[in-house]
Length: 288
Image (cartoon, rainbow, N blue to C red; front, side, top):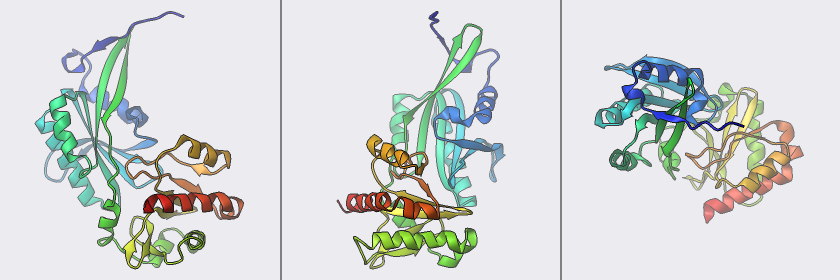
């Protein structure tokens, strides 16, 4: 086994490789960024006022979109402002999605990392440092998240007042049979808190108690499937337990600190005890 030491190169000063080249590599394989199982929605997306968004990526299994801006060399004020402007433009135009701004640069300096961190928690923002290496005659890219999204706590509840809908909305979006799974989940929840009720919002079905949101778990009905998202810290032992049971566990949602689990109607009977334990744990965690 031969060892070859990679040579760090700076794309900003490279004679042949450009920002467009990096953009194309990410467009071909959005997974390079380490943000999950993403697909490309658009490239060089024209913005209403001015400019073009480098990349618009979307999570395959949720309503989350990532507005990605790429910069060779060190990030600067204009890069930050441009990224946030494009993020804001997209979230206003497409309010049915959950939007995250993503800054990609070769050098995210400590000064600008401090500036960017001021937004984190108020603006969903991810900063990713890109390193290019030459190995023999080939070029490799490595992306490292230096500032991740943080859980926005009760931001979900704060948004609910502007997004309340009704059961018909979800039945039309999925089906009556799929939405009925939420009723079955509520029966389980009533074993430890009979006062909770379903609360219908545009982006998810939550829970409420005396008109106050209690979203220790939320539900997202889809065409042909149902997803539950309990809010819990990420625990390897819990993940092993869920996977060993054969439940369809998706990637952990770091922003909202939620597990995402696909359920079919048969899973309610097959995994009744485990689902009860999971919901009760999330409920107790939310009360602590």
